[in-house]
Length: 148
View 1 (tube, rainbow, N blue to C red):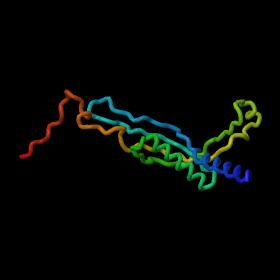
View 2 (view 1 turned 30 degrees about the horizontal axis):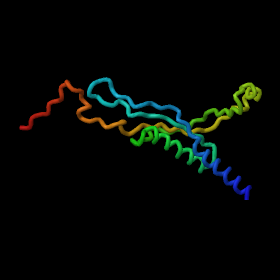
View 3 (view 1 turned 60 degrees about the vertical axis):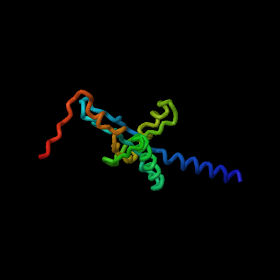
View 4 (view 1 turned 45 degrees about the horizontal axis):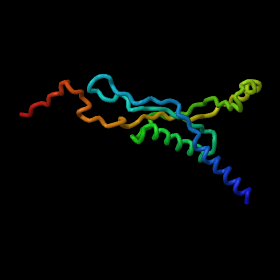
């Protein structure tokens, strides 16, 4: 009975850990224009990657975890995937903080793995711009044409 418990707990740890193997590579916070009346220039964007060198269901868990990170970054405002590409990158497993042990192995500890990169953008501004906030007080508003 103890062996079954240890096997199930080990499987649960492995399944929970394999979905979290996505990495947020780059983010850009939302930016507002310094020019009065322009509003938002950028709603926020980012890029994440995950490894492809595993079983299909593990890779789908990694993708799901990465999309969850994008959703969390955009704070529920929605996101759209701008670009998706595959790139071969180095993955160096460091067993300890002492690099001299890894350097003794030479170049053999460097391994090239395929990674899927996904570039995303947030769909809406962090907060909705009201008409009163869009044009600061004291500036002229455009005049509507007169209908004849």
